[in-house]
Image (cartoon, rainbow, N blue to C red; front, side):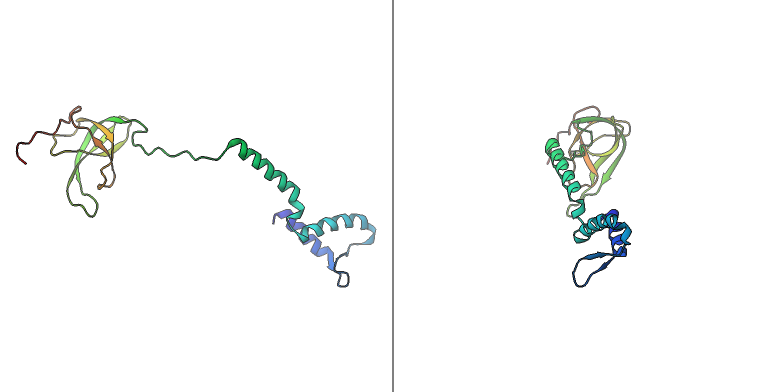
Length: 175
């Protein structure tokens, strides 16, 4: 119940007593303000019977305007946050800051070769180097693509072999 209805209800409770024989609200206000008291009492009686009843026309108009606005604007669609690390770009060039090895999550066991890269977008991220063996060092330039290494936490991009300073995988003669 809003503040206005509460104040009217408390005012009427202080000014009224319950008539036992007629089962209706009887005014306790002086008789010389009888007409004034009657209009206040009738409005207060309506509010006491049903607290929302006095506010019904305003609420109905508000609901209609809300429905019309909802129909006009259509459903509210939240804009999804871009989860792409490159903000929608397929590739990004980066400079190697440091070469690291990372451990995968629980069921797997290995040392994944990764590099920390400062991308052309300005972000620093950890990138996975696919394939067996690499010759990356600090300040090398690599091309990175979107694609996470699923068992290494925090690795969301991969380096592209054969571009810039990261050569293709060397051909092995023995298995």
